[in-house]
Image: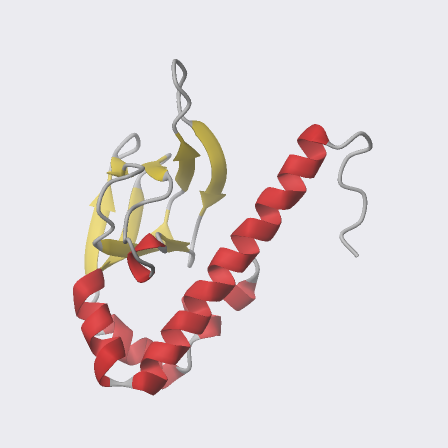
Amino acid sequence: MTSATTMTTALEPEYRERLMHLAREVSFEAGTRLFEEGRRADRFWIVRTGTVALDLRVPGRRPAVIESLGHGELVGWSWHFPPRLWQLGAEAMSPVRAWEFDADAVGELCARDPAFGRAVAVWVGRVVAQRLHASRIRLLDLYAPYGSGTTA
């Protein structure tokens, strides 16, 4: 993930500080499922250490890993968009330490302060756009006759 989508780069210091007041430290053992596709998205995380795999259910098989996330990256954006259901699943691939945020509390803070809300929305939007772009490149590598070639 590009540095433009990490919280420390995407949010002004004042907004990061306000968001971090809502954070709580959590840990996950390797193999722990953070969330499942189709369930209610009521929280999100910023990875401090370790790796989290985003995956997609495939009937009759293990979930297919879509992307791996590490230090400083946002895990979970579905909380920000109705219907607030996880679009993928996520699993800790190694021991993970993270900051966890309650989506309702963050949403309330965003509603009370439109400038903060816009900054969070732009950050989450950048994350979504970057992940869609990365998925497009992976699909081209898999299915295009000559691979992805250049992205220009």
